[in-house]
Length: 108
Image 1: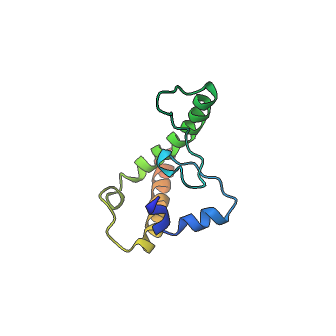
Image 2: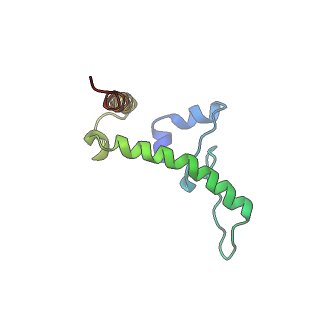
Image 3: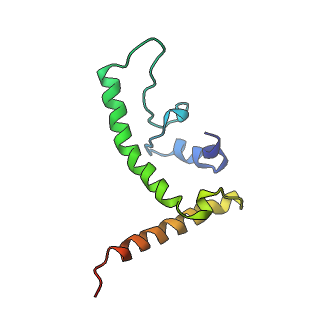
Protein backbone atom coordinates (compact mmCIF):
# COMPACT_ATOMS: atom_id res chain seq x y z
CA UNK A 1 0.00 0.00 0.00
CA UNK A 2 2.86 2.36 0.78
CA UNK A 3 4.32 1.96 -2.72
CA UNK A 4 1.01 2.84 -4.36
CA UNK A 5 0.70 5.97 -2.22
CA UNK A 6 4.33 7.03 -2.81
CA UNK A 7 4.07 6.90 -6.57
CA UNK A 8 0.72 8.73 -6.57
CA UNK A 9 -1.31 5.88 -8.01
CA UNK A 10 -3.77 5.64 -5.11
CA UNK A 11 -5.43 8.95 -5.99
CA UNK A 12 -5.59 7.92 -9.63
CA UNK A 13 -7.13 4.55 -8.79
CA UNK A 14 -9.62 6.09 -6.36
CA UNK A 15 -10.73 8.79 -8.80
CA UNK A 16 -11.20 6.52 -11.81
CA UNK A 17 -13.60 3.75 -12.63
CA UNK A 18 -10.66 1.39 -12.96
CA UNK A 19 -10.93 -2.04 -11.44
CA UNK A 20 -7.69 -3.53 -10.26
CA UNK A 21 -6.75 -6.78 -8.65
CA UNK A 22 -4.34 -7.10 -5.74
CA UNK A 23 -3.21 -9.65 -3.23
CA UNK A 24 -4.51 -9.75 0.33
CA UNK A 25 -2.00 -7.09 1.46
CA UNK A 26 -4.09 -4.43 -0.28
CA UNK A 27 -7.47 -5.16 1.28
CA UNK A 28 -7.88 -1.60 2.59
CA UNK A 29 -7.94 -0.19 -0.94
CA UNK A 30 -10.41 -0.17 -3.80
CA UNK A 31 -8.74 -3.26 -5.24
CA UNK A 32 -10.44 -6.57 -5.72
CA UNK A 33 -8.55 -8.94 -3.44
CA UNK A 34 -8.90 -12.60 -2.50
CA UNK A 35 -11.18 -13.39 0.40
CA UNK A 36 -9.14 -14.19 3.49
CA UNK A 37 -9.89 -17.26 5.54
CA UNK A 38 -11.21 -16.36 8.96
CA UNK A 39 -9.70 -18.08 12.00
CA UNK A 40 -11.33 -21.40 12.84
CA UNK A 41 -13.58 -21.26 9.79
CA UNK A 42 -13.37 -22.88 6.40
CA UNK A 43 -13.93 -21.02 3.16
CA UNK A 44 -17.24 -21.39 1.39
CA UNK A 45 -17.32 -22.77 -2.13
CA UNK A 46 -18.14 -19.24 -3.35
CA UNK A 47 -15.03 -17.88 -1.61
CA UNK A 48 -12.90 -20.63 -3.16
CA UNK A 49 -14.31 -19.99 -6.64
CA UNK A 50 -13.81 -16.24 -6.24
CA UNK A 51 -10.21 -16.68 -5.10
CA UNK A 52 -9.52 -19.11 -7.96
CA UNK A 53 -10.84 -16.62 -10.51
CA UNK A 54 -8.61 -13.88 -9.11
CA UNK A 55 -5.61 -16.23 -8.98
CA UNK A 56 -6.04 -17.12 -12.65
CA UNK A 57 -5.72 -13.45 -13.56
CA UNK A 58 -2.95 -12.65 -11.10
CA UNK A 59 -0.72 -15.53 -12.17
CA UNK A 60 -0.32 -13.98 -15.62
CA UNK A 61 0.65 -10.65 -14.08
CA UNK A 62 3.13 -12.36 -11.77
CA UNK A 63 4.70 -14.15 -14.75
CA UNK A 64 5.09 -10.82 -16.55
CA UNK A 65 6.73 -9.29 -13.48
CA UNK A 66 9.12 -12.24 -13.31
CA UNK A 67 10.05 -11.65 -16.96
CA UNK A 68 10.72 -7.96 -16.26
CA UNK A 69 12.90 -8.87 -13.28
CA UNK A 70 15.35 -10.54 -15.64
CA UNK A 71 16.49 -6.96 -16.30
CA UNK A 72 19.07 -6.10 -13.66
CA UNK A 73 17.79 -2.55 -13.07
CA UNK A 74 14.48 -3.98 -11.88
CA UNK A 75 15.71 -7.11 -10.11
CA UNK A 76 18.32 -5.59 -7.80
CA UNK A 77 16.31 -2.67 -6.57
CA UNK A 78 15.97 0.70 -8.20
CA UNK A 79 17.95 3.44 -6.49
CA UNK A 80 17.15 6.34 -8.81
CA UNK A 81 14.47 8.99 -8.62
CA UNK A 82 11.06 7.48 -7.92
CA UNK A 83 9.36 9.73 -10.47
CA UNK A 84 11.59 8.27 -13.22
CA UNK A 85 10.69 4.66 -12.40
CA UNK A 86 7.50 4.50 -14.53
CA UNK A 87 9.50 5.58 -17.58
CA UNK A 88 12.15 2.95 -16.91
CA UNK A 89 9.51 0.25 -16.47
CA UNK A 90 7.89 1.39 -19.74
CA UNK A 91 11.25 1.22 -21.53
CA UNK A 92 12.11 -2.23 -20.17
CA UNK A 93 8.62 -3.49 -21.03
CA UNK A 94 8.93 -2.28 -24.62
CA UNK A 95 12.40 -3.82 -24.94
CA UNK A 96 11.03 -7.12 -23.63
CA UNK A 97 8.15 -6.99 -26.14
CA UNK A 98 10.60 -6.23 -28.97
CA UNK A 99 12.88 -9.07 -27.89
CA UNK A 100 9.96 -11.51 -27.71
CA UNK A 101 8.62 -10.37 -31.08
CA UNK A 102 11.96 -10.61 -32.89
CA UNK A 103 12.78 -13.92 -31.22
CA UNK A 104 9.54 -15.47 -32.51
CA UNK A 105 9.96 -14.30 -36.12
CA UNK A 106 10.89 -16.94 -38.70
CA UNK A 107 14.49 -16.71 -39.86
CA UNK A 108 15.17 -16.30 -43.55
